[in-house]
Image (cartoon, rainbow, N blue to C red; front, side):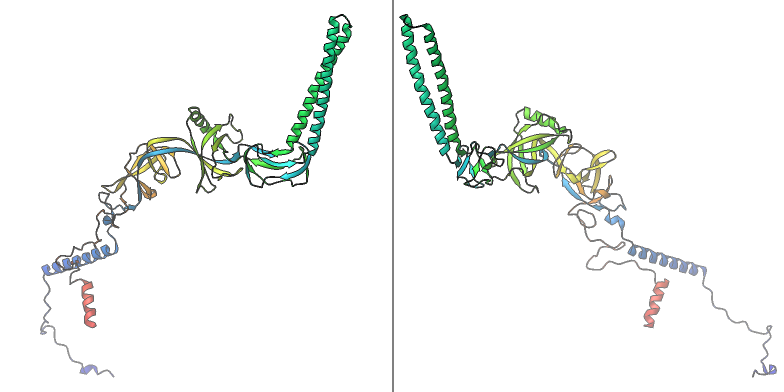
Length: 453
């Protein structure tokens, strides 16, 4: 229970109480100095934290570039001066100069087949024989008929000579002489017919020997020994295709036909190369032969023909090949890789490298002839200048770049990247990093944690 009110101590009178002593208040200068130290400590801590979490953008800028701009790693190539061939590419079909279907010219039984399938034959070489006995008999009959008529003609001529002698002696009528003269004329015509029949029989006997009309390669055989053959057979005996030399027919765009015709009119020997389907190997090399005289209205192209020796028999009739026709050669042409040329609203341009400043300049150029991997620069670029081939999509005029071989920080010499505010080590001592003041709250918190541990 609470003590009685009467027992509570009576407070001293305020009039007679001794005032308590108050603590000494710091001076104004001390308060100002403490405030400044706290502000400096906070500022130093914030500066250090910001620079530790944000990389220095100025260190990645290329030397001489704009401060704060990030450099782009690019690929470069050097413009070269070389001879640039002007190539016209097309798809062609191998076409033999001659293809002959060998048929017998007389009817008869096939007696011998003297060729093999796929064999190469020469013109006039014997390929097959037909039973010649019927043709030999026909020749003998024609020859006998001629000899008989020739004998009759000789007798008629003797009689005519005797009649003419009698007529000179006025011992015979002129009518008989004229009749005998007409008989001689008739027999002379009969002998001429007999000679023609004899020649036909001899010719048919010769046709019993089937020979190659052209030189070339024989295809598959279509008839066997013992079959009756005739000149009306559709398949004939075999097919001979001339494979050496051989032609390639290809289509030329009508826009290039005039240029091709002018080159052919000057007598220039234009080289033509035949490539396989994948363009990986060269089948043969030849020369341009001729150009058609009209444009195909359906395709807008003109047919052209090139001739190849085909010594290695790499070109096969009716084969599809890729044709490369060299129209002319441009000497001392400035060329760059195709990837270096870019197109904008103002036209074609390239990015030229300023090697000393590690920056690029946008250079308008005029394109020329093109090949599979090179492009001619007709104007706007000189041989020896470096152009950008990779990474151009992220560039602008004057942008800093990092070239192949440069250090990661974008400089040509380069070094290790240092933390902002740190100095290089000297005499084996580590560089000092600015720290916050000892009176900062962070420093007092770390000290209290250490004492508690």
